[in-house]
Image (tube, rainbow, N blue to C red):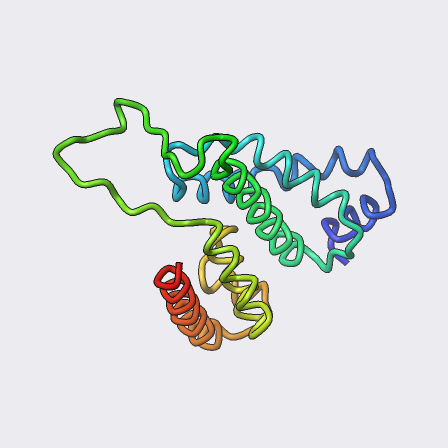
Length: 188
């Protein structure tokens, strides 16, 4: 059993000292995940990588699930980051806070170029929830690739599959999500 796994088991059993020692070990990796994802997000995103890492870490150490090593932990981290960002997107989109209004800083506006299309994180989350009822493994792969910033080879290793199988599953998941999100967009 790796030192990481032993530490995670101690944290699961409520060992606060170990939880404090674990954060520095995983902090840099979690921060890379957060920075990578926030870089993809629109500039109006109110989240900072540091607060996202801390909130994701708190959710992970409060989780009652068992960690079967680093791969499982970082897969769960990707899911925690996804949930936090979706919650924030829903809050930003609520009518109480201005609905669908997109706030831009003046220096972020370039009047000579058309605006870039913004991805809809809530629509992606809803599509991923539907995909999980059809193919949980595809959903896990998308979360690892999109929310944790792992490469396809790293994701395949975490999931215990060959890179070729992961590549086929990724192609399937992308096509499924693209179709699902397009049909929901056309129906709304």
